[in-house]
Length: 294
Image (cartoon, rainbow, N blue to C red; front, side):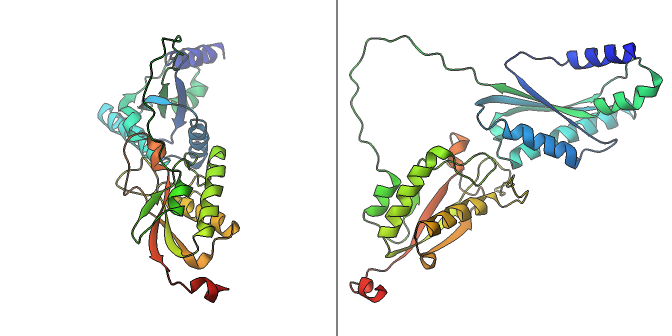
């Protein structure tokens, strides 16, 4: 028993990283690189905890046990690492920060109590994820103040909606940010969405499509909604805004919603790709329209 404990300490100690790094391990069945449901749930919980982490880089390393040929184990360990990379991407972790995806082959079996060999081999069939967060920004000492010209502040989304519009205009919802992997807006975005809804209630002559977008997925695919486990996150985001507007009094007949997947990334910070826009489809500018509606 003491030998087993010693081995486990050595095993995990050999992969110790600096205190700044965040690590997670995903375990696999023998000869498999598909993630089993229990490990998938653990991984999704880990990803959820990264929502507020400013990630510098991610390294993914795959491992196998000592059973099988070296060439087979090397290939399998690489497949396991690639499977985890795909899962991170599907849940809106930008591939730009995944800097290393590698298969390390087999982990040699240490001398342990024979009755525990299968358990130790199970620990070796894994992928290790290493998150390297960006260092905190140090506050600079107050320097001599320099007069900087004040740039003209861009209009808020609600103000744009109240202005002059034409068919085909696309209006991006500025400052409406979504939680990674979910269709729910961040709390600080709620007031802005309220203002937009009020502006749309006033502009009852415009008809529009709500378009939802996601970030970071491969091949313009949609992302997986962590709440429903379905690959329709861009649709879910557009539907969330649609339902919100309905509650605030916007007529359903004036709106439709559509998921745009990752067809139109903006570039830059991935959080801005987790967005919603509206496209003006029709403007009913008949002078007697209001009287007809009343």
